[in-house]
Image (cartoon, rainbow, N blue to C red; front, side, top):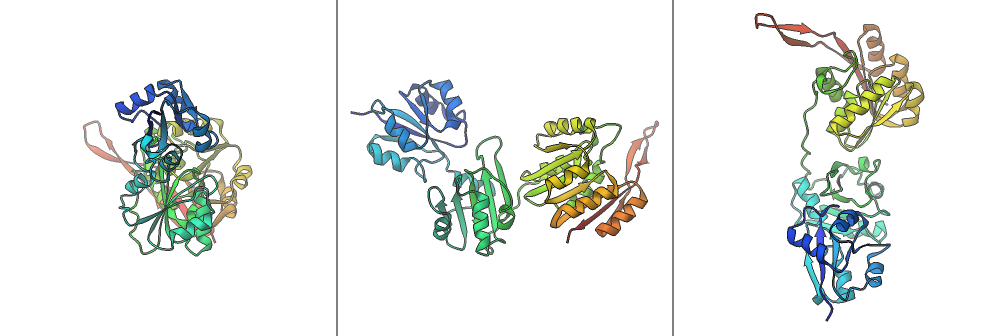
Length: 395
């Protein structure tokens, strides 16, 4: 009589979080079948690993499973997973299933929402309009996405149906270190890029809202950044600049004349789905930006060269901070920023600040005085140089 086929559900790409009993089953199996992402860790346990290629059905029928096997599946294999196919091919009596958390359950958990009232639709192997029709028009709907039907493509289709203002959450790499949850409007999601195997949750207007994600603090001390000769945006000034940028949940930000990269780095920390491009012509600054981005654990696009040449190549963008380069660079950033985007600029000189205020429409002067200890232990205030911040929304 054929031996059992053990099906183990795995959240994410790693096996190390599985219980010891499951790891022993992997190690002792006559053959282990799973997606290529499991290959490295599975081979460390068992050299008899077979990667699924190109489809699970092809792999299952090409391997001798009479002596039993372990199949590594994604999440809960009984939820739009491998269980149905395995049962059809080998019979349910041969299956021993150890389910993991489903990606849909984890996605709703990350949002802090119940999902007993949600509709779940798979967009694998079916036309996108068919999946949307099956989902209906209201409430909460989770879509299991595919390389053909991505989050941005789904969002674009929903926009064409007049649902651009609905809320959409995209959950990527669930269970892995680079897990990312992005919450935005459907229209905003349509303009961004995501992993093709993500989970998307669409919540119609008027339905239970998605709670805002946890925000980290910003305005990190200058001492946390590598910089040259105090050429860094002061922490308090950086906080004001970030508030005026009004960062969107997705999109592209240009940090022009980035220096240490502090503004762009903190923007990336605040909004992980935001693409940040740091531009500077100084090779030393470019090195500092790279070192600081690595230290803070964020991924930036770092562009070395003159702003006049680089700004058009990254257009259109949704936000821009001009920290150097003068009024000509500001005009160029304004010209290439997306309509309804925001441009912010800072200046130490009053004449440039006044011109920037005329161009952008808003200005504030920031004066910072920091406490400093006197020799006798008393406290005085030490004034920093005042800086002007101008900002405006593009027509």
